[in-house]
Length: 197
Image 1 (cartoon, rainbow, N blue to C red):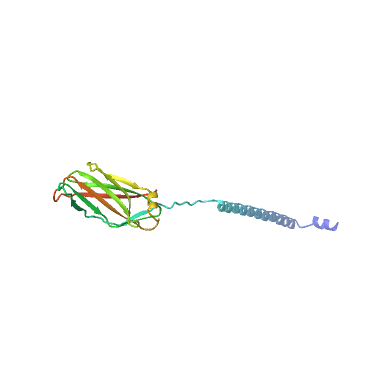
Image 2: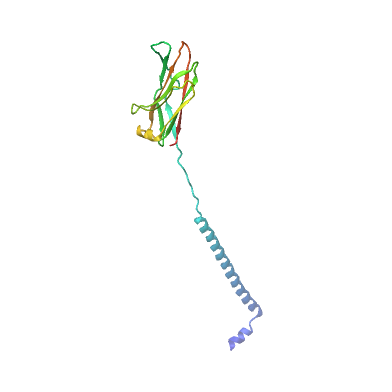
């Protein structure tokens, strides 16, 4: 009973302080709850960033190159027995092909300069490693139009082509002149294109 009376006679200021102290506790509790919620949101955002997936992709490109060989090949002329015609013939120095995959090789013979029609033309591709002809293309047409051939990847495989190693070939061009005269100049270009299989 005395305790009740003592409470009843408490100083009003003390009562206010007590109430204010209780409100402070509520306020601190609310702040802590808000901080915990914010921390939970932050953690959720971090988890979302960790779960994000970025993919990186790459493809190794096909690579093929030529080195060596001859920029200009002098062709020899041999006159036939009848004297009215002759054969032009020239062979290049070793030309190295390096590729990271078995390639296809396109070979085109272009007649750049021909004062007269040519009775026969041909381009011959030879494997130096195997000392054998890989492929050739010839024509008996007198039009002097380009002639082309493509060596397949499987053919290179048959002739021992190894990826990432130099593979040596040489090129031979021949032309049969039906009528030949001194000091006439003939010129031929061979275009090589390395292609993916």
